[in-house]
Structures are given as C-alpha cells and as structure tokens.
Image: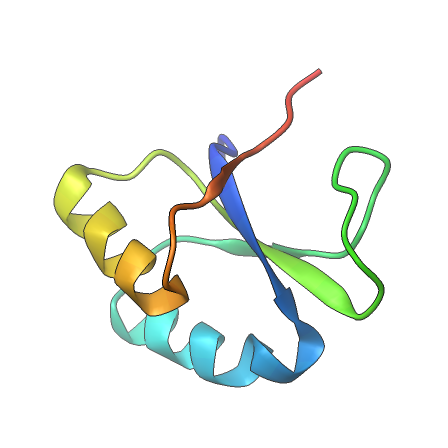
Length: 73
C-alpha cells in the first residue's frame, strides 16, 4: 500500500476507529512510532493510501480533522 497520509491517535481510540473504518471498507494500516513517524508516547498512527474525495471526506469526519502527509524518504 502506498502511504499517503496519517492520523495520530491514543491507544485507547484504536478500537472504535478500526471498527468504523472496516465497516466503511476503507484501507488502512496501524503503525507504531518509528524513525519516520515521530508520535507522542501512547500514540499510534492510522495510515492511509490516496483516497478519492468522497472517501477522504468520510475519514476526515471520523477523525475530526485533515490528515498529516506521510513522510517519505
């Protein structure tokens, strides 16, 4: 999957977000902090590929903001 953007969230939020995204059939990965993704302690990242505008709008509404660009080498 080509990684395009991500949202950082607390561990406690993973469950309902994962269920919602699976129900919406939106592709995603969950990543822990790495050299590339600097996250706060206790956070993970929901990572997404490029999405069409309608699907992105649903993701944006679920997370409450625009995603951050995924850092590439």
